[in-house]
Length: 328
Image 1: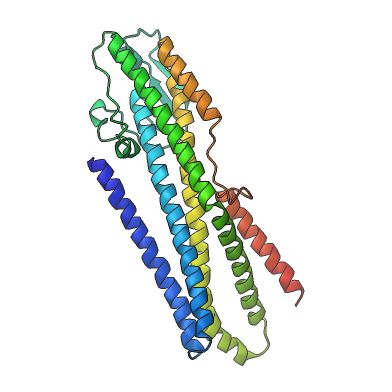
Image 2: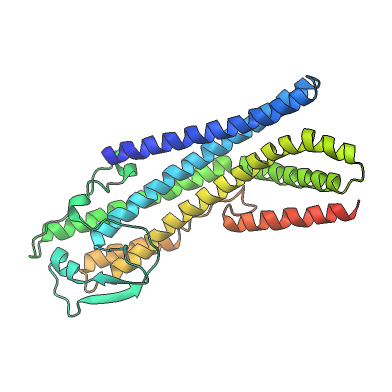
């Protein structure tokens, strides 16, 4: 429970920080525009402020949901690492100690270690005393229950083996629920994200095009006035738009990466040979389930929300800006 409270406090602080930063930029941008125009067109400015504010709140909600889901996937991976005795703190090639299988499942192995490729650098606790600290926040929140650790006795016991199978099955169920929740969140926010990204793309192209056109202007007075009346609000708008795109793509990429780590951990677990038939069967079913559950967030199915979208966003905006400059 302390670990759960820490995650929730961290998430609350993260959301508050986002709100403060984005609202400050929005007020600075529209407040400066209202002041520079002497109070004229205040209705138009207020309407655009409300639209920007609602779009920003929607993106913050989406990013917050994705961040929570990423933490749940991370907790599932921690539990799976503890069950398999997988230590991911090493770099390069990683050693999975088969001696753990003999210690945990009462099975004699002919080799001491099996060398497998390293998947990522995420630190994972491998102490049985830290099981309670690594308990999934998702499990505790939904009252699924705490995964019981098996006995440390070197003798093989049927009860211990059945408990391990039950723990793996519970992790399978939790992973399935998390995957379904991710699909629900994506379906709810998909169309809104598509419209928001399209608006952000057009706004960035528009403002950068206006700046470049003004910089090549031959009228120094007009250029000076634009730098005062145009550059300042432009920086606020572009900062908000770029921050929104970065928040969305980074959060979706991290969540997909954390969900993909489960497949790697299950495959590493299967490398611990020999395993009992029931444990091996449960892990193979888990692996088949993960094979058909590739997590991916999209903007209403049009494009994936990851770093590849960020690359395409920059390249597309640059292309359109160059094309528009050629028409001047």
